Image 1 (cartoon, rainbow, N blue to C red):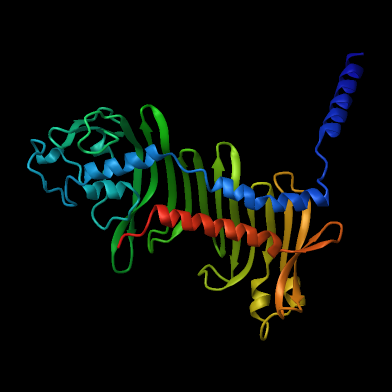
Image 2 (image 1 turned 120 degrees about the vertical axis):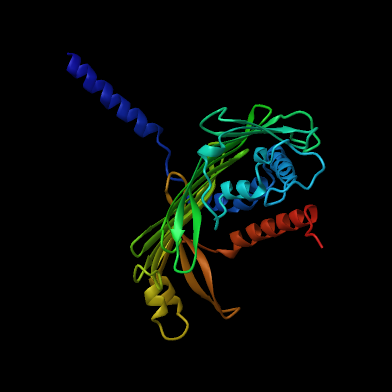
Length: 362
């Protein structure tokens, strides 16, 4: 009897799940989703990153600039011993800039660096803590008297690159975060593997939280294949992402043979592949038929991955040019420009607003 009851429960659960599963959206719903992309993008581009994180970085740079790149004080007041200074060059090295000097010894610099507004310098407590580097400084810059920002570097590792003519250090791991008044504003993890004879990356991974966004990026190289992916999240929502797999003709990565990838924004995902070798082997400009043969692109809903439409090349008789249209699952077609033009207008408008708010220095 227990086995029968268990079987009935399994069947009932499966029936409930199948009944509750979302059905594929209609063509009309898919077209409306595409029409809504411009409005959604306008809203997304209006969400700005938290200013406190940026302000803290600016304040930190101002404090570090109290000393010149070689560590010589340019101020009247300084700490009592030159050994109790952290130079700008050291910080830049920790900030993932390749170094041509000796490697940075992370363990020799662990401790707490607390900003002293009176001395306009860092008060250093070495080996406390003994496993990380902690900076305490004011959010309002070197003149501030309240150290309400904590920047912690948990790990920094690097590897020596010995090239044919020069040698330098590249970072292999950086882990850090920044808190303002006990609230996390920035969180960073960077990992890398390098070819130690030429400095080219074998793999890269970056995860950066800049309140309220989280950016994740990766790069992998194996033989003649290269893969890249980038993901931007707002909270737990995947706003936009892109990935591409590139196949080259050899491990030297000279000529591209094929591409496969995707571009996702909100509820829409474009996925496909390109036969680059066949396109480049053509004599003259490719025809519509050849483009449709060697370029395969499809729109899907995201994350359910229901097919929305095929992307198809066509010839515009009026303007005498090759154009792109969407062929929906019911056979209806819509020029891609009907959706892309409104998105482009939003991007251009937002870029103009950014340029007006942050004009270029003369």
